[in-house]
Length: 84
Image 1 (cartoon, helix red, strand yellow):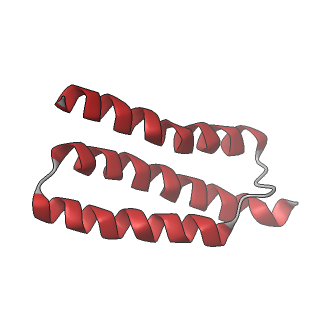
Image 2 (cartoon, helix red, strand yellow):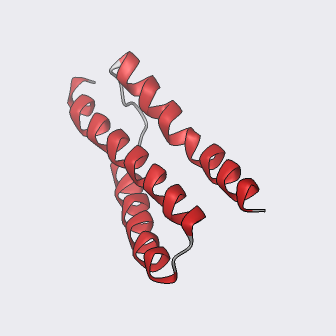
Image 3 (tube, one colour):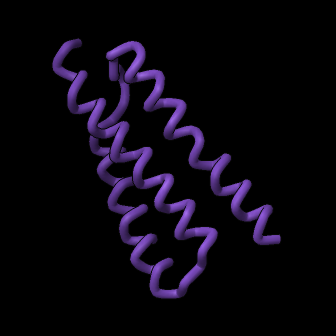
């Protein structure tokens, strides 16, 4: 079951990286909410703190991937939003 957890959490977080690739390629961040990204990043961070406390490896990996993806997307959105 742990393998299913890893596969599921990676697929779930793949969406962030698809969006990162799109924004990096187009250099456009139209319609992406900065407030939403800050909210998601805060949530991932808080959940990661909890997950580290309980020691759930699947969620530690998943939250790390998600946090990195959201942080990368937030960086790109802040970088390219003034160009529009």
